[in-house]
Amino acid sequence: MAYDLEEQEQIDTLKAWWKQYGNLATWLLIAGLSAFAGWTAWTNYQHGQAAQASTIYEELQRAAGVKDNAKVQGAATNLVEKYARTSYATMAALTAARSAFDANDMKSAKTQLTWVAEHGQTKEFQALAKLRLTSILLDEKNYDDALKVLSGDFSTEFEADVLDRKADVFVAQNKIKEARETYKAALDKMGEKHAGRQLVQIKLDALGGAIDAKVAVTSEKK
Image 1 (cartoon, rainbow, N blue to C red):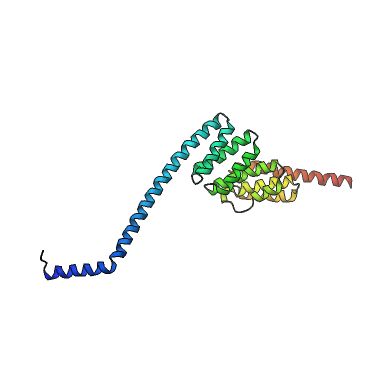
Image 2 (image 1 turned 45 degrees about the horizontal axis):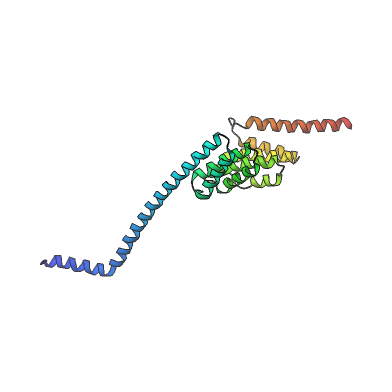
């Protein structure tokens, strides 16, 4: 096919460009297509993982409904080991912790809560697990570990609850001054409509009454 002079110049220019940049352009195109294929495969994989995790989570919920703690723990372990990056694993571990607690299986409860505290899908789930774990440690009189769990940063919505729980630990340690100060700090963080505000106030008032009573007794002895 014959080309006029202008067309021939365009063709020569294109050939020269391709000779210089053709390989680079090809590799960029391949890289782009590979990235898109990889993203599509990963998305499909994630959807598949979520679907499989959902099925196991449903089984866990049924087992929890009939209080079959052994099956609940097994399903939760399966989710945590195989689908840890899904939200189902976090929810399963929290459900398993409650199931274990109800079955007086404190070892399993602590294991599940510790996993969520360290690997939970969100900071909120992690905070919730830490608060529940602290309750168990407090019952076990493991005060030092309880305070360790409550150390570190928490999201704003949990700050008051963390302070409240720390004060509970101080009371158990008979550190009354620290407890009163921490309960007051918790109240300062709580809004007027906070569900736990009244209970914290009651605990603070009880500490004040106990201290006043000791002072009164000491005065009478003098």
